[in-house]
Image: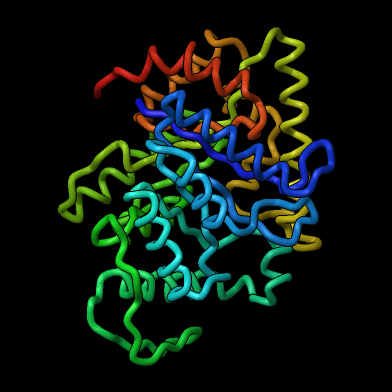
Length: 335
Protein backbone atom coordinates (compact mmCIF):
# COMPACT_ATOMS: atom_id res chain seq x y z
CA UNK A 1 0.00 0.00 0.00
CA UNK A 2 0.96 3.61 -0.53
CA UNK A 3 -0.06 6.61 1.54
CA UNK A 4 -0.52 10.24 0.64
CA UNK A 5 -2.24 13.25 2.17
CA UNK A 6 -5.51 15.01 1.43
CA UNK A 7 -6.51 18.43 2.69
CA UNK A 8 -6.29 22.15 2.33
CA UNK A 9 -5.24 25.28 4.16
CA UNK A 10 -6.52 28.59 5.45
CA UNK A 11 -4.52 31.75 4.83
CA UNK A 12 -5.13 33.08 8.32
CA UNK A 13 -3.47 31.04 11.05
CA UNK A 14 -5.06 30.13 14.37
CA UNK A 15 -3.23 33.10 15.88
CA UNK A 16 -4.82 35.46 13.33
CA UNK A 17 -1.76 36.13 11.17
CA UNK A 18 -2.69 36.55 7.51
CA UNK A 19 -0.63 34.27 5.27
CA UNK A 20 0.80 32.20 8.13
CA UNK A 21 -1.71 29.42 7.56
CA UNK A 22 -0.40 28.85 4.05
CA UNK A 23 3.18 28.88 5.31
CA UNK A 24 2.29 26.35 8.02
CA UNK A 25 0.71 24.14 5.36
CA UNK A 26 3.90 24.26 3.31
CA UNK A 27 6.06 23.28 6.29
CA UNK A 28 3.66 20.46 7.17
CA UNK A 29 4.00 19.04 3.66
CA UNK A 30 7.77 19.55 3.58
CA UNK A 31 7.91 17.30 6.63
CA UNK A 32 5.56 14.83 4.93
CA UNK A 33 8.02 14.66 2.02
CA UNK A 34 10.85 13.87 4.45
CA UNK A 35 8.70 11.21 6.15
CA UNK A 36 8.14 9.43 2.83
CA UNK A 37 4.51 10.22 2.04
CA UNK A 38 3.82 9.48 -1.63
CA UNK A 39 1.63 12.47 -2.46
CA UNK A 40 -0.37 15.40 -1.19
CA UNK A 41 -3.72 16.40 -2.74
CA UNK A 42 -5.09 19.89 -2.07
CA UNK A 43 -8.66 21.15 -2.34
CA UNK A 44 -9.97 24.20 -4.21
CA UNK A 45 -12.73 26.28 -2.60
CA UNK A 46 -14.12 29.81 -2.83
CA UNK A 47 -16.33 32.32 -1.03
CA UNK A 48 -16.52 30.68 2.39
CA UNK A 49 -15.16 33.59 4.42
CA UNK A 50 -12.74 31.12 6.06
CA UNK A 51 -9.74 32.21 3.90
CA UNK A 52 -9.80 28.71 2.40
CA UNK A 53 -7.35 27.62 -0.28
CA UNK A 54 -8.58 29.06 -3.59
CA UNK A 55 -5.43 29.38 -5.76
CA UNK A 56 -4.46 25.73 -5.44
CA UNK A 57 -1.90 25.51 -8.25
CA UNK A 58 -0.06 28.55 -6.85
CA UNK A 59 0.38 26.90 -3.45
CA UNK A 60 1.40 23.59 -5.03
CA UNK A 61 4.02 25.33 -7.16
CA UNK A 62 5.59 26.79 -4.00
CA UNK A 63 5.40 23.38 -2.35
CA UNK A 64 7.00 21.61 -5.31
CA UNK A 65 9.93 24.04 -5.09
CA UNK A 66 10.41 23.13 -1.41
CA UNK A 67 10.25 19.34 -1.84
CA UNK A 68 12.00 16.62 -3.81
CA UNK A 69 9.87 13.50 -3.98
CA UNK A 70 6.26 14.00 -2.90
CA UNK A 71 3.72 14.20 -5.73
CA UNK A 72 1.58 17.34 -5.73
CA UNK A 73 -2.09 16.93 -6.57
CA UNK A 74 -5.41 18.73 -6.73
CA UNK A 75 -8.57 17.24 -5.25
CA UNK A 76 -10.13 18.80 -7.09
CA UNK A 77 -9.88 21.65 -9.56
CA UNK A 78 -13.52 22.48 -10.30
CA UNK A 79 -13.60 22.70 -14.08
CA UNK A 80 -16.82 24.77 -14.41
CA UNK A 81 -14.96 27.75 -12.89
CA UNK A 82 -11.85 27.61 -15.09
CA UNK A 83 -10.80 28.82 -18.53
CA UNK A 84 -9.49 25.53 -19.97
CA UNK A 85 -6.59 27.02 -21.90
CA UNK A 86 -5.29 29.02 -18.93
CA UNK A 87 -5.67 25.94 -16.72
CA UNK A 88 -3.79 23.78 -19.25
CA UNK A 89 -0.93 26.29 -19.34
CA UNK A 90 -0.73 26.62 -15.56
CA UNK A 91 -0.87 22.87 -14.94
CA UNK A 92 1.78 22.14 -17.57
CA UNK A 93 4.05 24.80 -16.07
CA UNK A 94 3.74 23.25 -12.62
CA UNK A 95 4.36 19.79 -14.07
CA UNK A 96 7.55 21.00 -15.73
CA UNK A 97 8.85 22.82 -12.67
CA UNK A 98 8.12 19.83 -10.42
CA UNK A 99 9.80 17.47 -12.90
CA UNK A 100 6.63 15.49 -13.53
CA UNK A 101 5.12 15.35 -10.05
CA UNK A 102 1.67 16.78 -10.77
CA UNK A 103 -1.54 14.75 -10.33
CA UNK A 104 -4.48 16.81 -11.58
CA UNK A 105 -7.72 15.95 -9.83
CA UNK A 106 -10.75 17.45 -11.56
CA UNK A 107 -14.44 17.65 -10.72
CA UNK A 108 -17.79 19.30 -11.40
CA UNK A 109 -18.22 21.01 -8.03
CA UNK A 110 -20.94 20.56 -5.43
CA UNK A 111 -21.13 23.69 -3.27
CA UNK A 112 -24.13 25.95 -3.75
CA UNK A 113 -22.22 29.04 -2.55
CA UNK A 114 -19.60 28.54 -5.27
CA UNK A 115 -22.05 28.11 -8.15
CA UNK A 116 -24.03 31.07 -6.83
CA UNK A 117 -20.92 33.21 -6.35
CA UNK A 118 -19.59 32.54 -9.84
CA UNK A 119 -23.10 33.04 -11.31
CA UNK A 120 -22.87 29.61 -12.95
CA UNK A 121 -26.09 27.58 -12.97
CA UNK A 122 -25.57 24.26 -11.22
CA UNK A 123 -27.60 22.69 -14.03
CA UNK A 124 -24.71 23.49 -16.40
CA UNK A 125 -22.02 21.83 -14.27
CA UNK A 126 -21.76 18.60 -16.24
CA UNK A 127 -21.82 20.27 -19.66
CA UNK A 128 -19.18 22.80 -18.57
CA UNK A 129 -17.04 20.03 -17.10
CA UNK A 130 -17.20 17.96 -20.30
CA UNK A 131 -16.33 20.84 -22.61
CA UNK A 132 -13.51 22.11 -20.40
CA UNK A 133 -12.00 18.63 -20.16
CA UNK A 134 -12.21 18.19 -23.94
CA UNK A 135 -10.31 21.45 -24.45
CA UNK A 136 -7.73 20.53 -21.79
CA UNK A 137 -6.93 17.24 -23.53
CA UNK A 138 -6.75 18.94 -26.91
CA UNK A 139 -4.47 21.66 -25.51
CA UNK A 140 -2.01 19.11 -24.10
CA UNK A 141 -1.97 16.65 -26.96
CA UNK A 142 -1.94 18.83 -30.11
CA UNK A 143 1.34 20.26 -31.28
CA UNK A 144 -0.26 22.22 -34.08
CA UNK A 145 -2.55 25.22 -33.77
CA UNK A 146 -6.25 24.58 -33.32
CA UNK A 147 -9.54 26.39 -32.88
CA UNK A 148 -12.45 25.53 -30.63
CA UNK A 149 -15.98 26.90 -30.73
CA UNK A 150 -18.22 25.30 -28.15
CA UNK A 151 -21.18 26.13 -25.97
CA UNK A 152 -19.13 27.90 -23.30
CA UNK A 153 -15.64 28.49 -24.71
CA UNK A 154 -14.21 29.90 -27.94
CA UNK A 155 -10.55 29.89 -29.00
CA UNK A 156 -9.18 30.80 -32.41
CA UNK A 157 -5.93 29.55 -33.97
CA UNK A 158 -4.06 28.85 -30.74
CA UNK A 159 -1.14 26.67 -29.72
CA UNK A 160 -0.97 25.95 -26.00
CA UNK A 161 2.43 26.22 -24.31
CA UNK A 162 4.41 24.88 -22.54
CA UNK A 163 4.20 21.09 -22.96
CA UNK A 164 3.91 19.12 -19.76
CA UNK A 165 6.73 16.95 -18.41
CA UNK A 166 4.46 13.90 -18.17
CA UNK A 167 3.19 12.74 -21.53
CA UNK A 168 0.70 12.97 -23.01
CA UNK A 169 -0.35 15.03 -19.96
CA UNK A 170 -0.36 14.86 -16.14
CA UNK A 171 -2.46 12.00 -14.73
CA UNK A 172 -6.10 13.00 -14.38
CA UNK A 173 -8.09 11.99 -11.31
CA UNK A 174 -11.87 12.24 -10.97
CA UNK A 175 -13.98 11.90 -7.83
CA UNK A 176 -16.95 9.55 -8.17
CA UNK A 177 -19.27 7.47 -6.03
CA UNK A 178 -22.33 6.38 -8.02
CA UNK A 179 -22.11 3.51 -10.50
CA UNK A 180 -22.88 5.88 -13.38
CA UNK A 181 -20.18 8.35 -12.40
CA UNK A 182 -17.59 5.58 -11.91
CA UNK A 183 -18.33 4.30 -15.42
CA UNK A 184 -17.75 7.83 -16.75
CA UNK A 185 -14.37 8.02 -14.97
CA UNK A 186 -13.28 4.77 -16.61
CA UNK A 187 -14.61 5.87 -20.00
CA UNK A 188 -12.60 9.08 -19.75
CA UNK A 189 -9.43 7.11 -18.99
CA UNK A 190 -9.05 8.89 -15.65
CA UNK A 191 -7.93 7.63 -12.26
CA UNK A 192 -10.54 7.35 -9.50
CA UNK A 193 -10.82 9.31 -6.26
CA UNK A 194 -13.11 7.80 -3.61
CA UNK A 195 -14.64 9.77 -0.76
CA UNK A 196 -13.99 9.75 2.99
CA UNK A 197 -17.29 8.30 4.20
CA UNK A 198 -18.11 5.01 2.44
CA UNK A 199 -17.58 1.78 4.39
CA UNK A 200 -15.47 -1.15 3.14
CA UNK A 201 -18.30 -3.13 1.52
CA UNK A 202 -19.34 -0.11 -0.55
CA UNK A 203 -15.72 0.65 -1.41
CA UNK A 204 -15.19 -2.95 -2.57
CA UNK A 205 -18.15 -2.64 -4.95
CA UNK A 206 -16.88 0.65 -6.38
CA UNK A 207 -13.36 -0.62 -6.93
CA UNK A 208 -14.64 -3.82 -8.57
CA UNK A 209 -16.89 -1.81 -10.88
CA UNK A 210 -14.09 0.55 -11.87
CA UNK A 211 -11.74 -2.41 -12.49
CA UNK A 212 -14.27 -4.15 -14.71
CA UNK A 213 -14.99 -0.96 -16.66
CA UNK A 214 -11.28 -0.29 -17.21
CA UNK A 215 -10.62 -3.84 -18.38
CA UNK A 216 -13.72 -3.83 -20.60
CA UNK A 217 -12.07 -0.99 -22.53
CA UNK A 218 -8.93 -3.03 -23.14
CA UNK A 219 -6.78 -1.32 -20.53
CA UNK A 220 -4.84 -2.87 -17.67
CA UNK A 221 -6.19 -2.14 -14.22
CA UNK A 222 -3.67 -0.69 -11.76
CA UNK A 223 -4.85 -0.51 -8.13
CA UNK A 224 -2.66 2.56 -7.64
CA UNK A 225 -5.04 4.38 -10.00
CA UNK A 226 -7.68 4.36 -7.23
CA UNK A 227 -7.12 6.59 -4.20
CA UNK A 228 -9.32 6.53 -1.10
CA UNK A 229 -9.53 9.55 1.22
CA UNK A 230 -9.82 8.91 4.97
CA UNK A 231 -9.86 11.16 8.03
CA UNK A 232 -6.96 10.15 10.30
CA UNK A 233 -6.27 10.98 13.94
CA UNK A 234 -4.01 9.07 16.34
CA UNK A 235 -5.67 9.50 19.73
CA UNK A 236 -4.03 9.38 23.15
CA UNK A 237 -7.07 7.67 24.67
CA UNK A 238 -10.81 7.21 24.16
CA UNK A 239 -11.65 10.70 25.45
CA UNK A 240 -9.18 12.26 23.03
CA UNK A 241 -10.67 10.21 20.21
CA UNK A 242 -14.23 11.31 20.99
CA UNK A 243 -13.17 14.97 21.23
CA UNK A 244 -11.52 14.72 17.80
CA UNK A 245 -14.65 13.12 16.33
CA UNK A 246 -16.75 15.97 17.72
CA UNK A 247 -14.42 18.53 16.12
CA UNK A 248 -14.71 16.64 12.84
CA UNK A 249 -18.51 16.63 13.07
CA UNK A 250 -18.59 20.41 13.58
CA UNK A 251 -16.35 20.95 10.58
CA UNK A 252 -18.47 18.59 8.50
CA UNK A 253 -21.63 20.53 9.35
CA UNK A 254 -19.90 23.77 8.41
CA UNK A 255 -19.18 22.32 4.97
CA UNK A 256 -22.75 21.07 4.55
CA UNK A 257 -24.07 24.53 5.35
CA UNK A 258 -22.18 26.16 2.46
CA UNK A 259 -22.72 23.26 0.09
CA UNK A 260 -26.48 22.96 0.02
CA UNK A 261 -28.87 25.27 -1.74
CA UNK A 262 -31.38 26.97 0.56
CA UNK A 263 -34.27 24.64 1.31
CA UNK A 264 -32.52 21.64 -0.22
CA UNK A 265 -32.32 18.51 1.91
CA UNK A 266 -30.20 16.42 -0.44
CA UNK A 267 -26.90 16.98 -2.16
CA UNK A 268 -23.97 15.09 -3.58
CA UNK A 269 -23.29 11.53 -2.46
CA UNK A 270 -20.46 12.89 -0.30
CA UNK A 271 -22.86 15.12 1.61
CA UNK A 272 -25.30 12.27 2.04
CA UNK A 273 -22.60 10.29 3.84
CA UNK A 274 -21.46 13.36 5.73
CA UNK A 275 -24.86 13.69 7.38
CA UNK A 276 -24.28 10.52 9.36
CA UNK A 277 -22.14 11.06 12.46
CA UNK A 278 -22.08 7.34 13.22
CA UNK A 279 -21.14 6.57 9.62
CA UNK A 280 -18.25 8.99 9.77
CA UNK A 281 -16.98 7.46 13.00
CA UNK A 282 -17.10 4.00 11.44
CA UNK A 283 -15.20 5.17 8.34
CA UNK A 284 -12.67 7.54 9.91
CA UNK A 285 -9.26 6.22 10.93
CA UNK A 286 -9.46 7.59 14.47
CA UNK A 287 -8.06 5.90 17.57
CA UNK A 288 -4.95 4.07 18.67
CA UNK A 289 -2.43 2.77 16.12
CA UNK A 290 -3.91 -0.71 16.60
CA UNK A 291 -7.45 0.52 15.94
CA UNK A 292 -6.33 2.34 12.82
CA UNK A 293 -4.40 -0.70 11.60
CA UNK A 294 -7.51 -2.88 11.93
CA UNK A 295 -9.50 -0.46 9.80
CA UNK A 296 -6.72 -0.40 7.22
CA UNK A 297 -6.83 -4.19 7.12
CA UNK A 298 -10.51 -4.00 6.23
CA UNK A 299 -9.78 -1.45 3.51
CA UNK A 300 -6.99 -3.62 2.13
CA UNK A 301 -9.40 -6.56 1.98
CA UNK A 302 -11.81 -4.34 0.03
CA UNK A 303 -9.14 -3.74 -2.62
CA UNK A 304 -7.71 -0.43 -1.44
CA UNK A 305 -4.00 0.02 -2.15
CA UNK A 306 -3.68 3.81 -2.00
CA UNK A 307 -4.92 5.89 0.95
CA UNK A 308 -4.98 9.68 1.19
CA UNK A 309 -4.93 10.66 4.86
CA UNK A 310 -6.69 13.84 5.92
CA UNK A 311 -5.22 14.98 9.24
CA UNK A 312 -6.55 18.49 9.42
CA UNK A 313 -3.27 19.99 8.16
CA UNK A 314 -1.96 20.76 11.63
CA UNK A 315 -1.58 17.52 13.55
CA UNK A 316 2.16 16.93 13.31
CA UNK A 317 1.90 14.17 15.92
CA UNK A 318 -0.55 12.25 13.74
CA UNK A 319 1.53 12.94 10.63
CA UNK A 320 4.66 11.51 12.28
CA UNK A 321 2.94 8.74 14.21
CA UNK A 322 1.07 7.48 11.15
CA UNK A 323 4.27 7.40 9.09
CA UNK A 324 6.35 5.69 11.77
CA UNK A 325 3.90 3.44 13.60
CA UNK A 326 1.34 2.40 10.99
CA UNK A 327 2.64 2.80 7.43
CA UNK A 328 5.56 0.32 7.73
CA UNK A 329 3.18 -2.59 8.41
CA UNK A 330 1.36 -1.96 5.12
CA UNK A 331 3.91 -0.29 2.84
CA UNK A 332 5.69 -3.49 1.82
CA UNK A 333 2.55 -5.44 0.94
CA UNK A 334 1.96 -6.71 -2.56
CA UNK A 335 -1.34 -7.82 -3.98
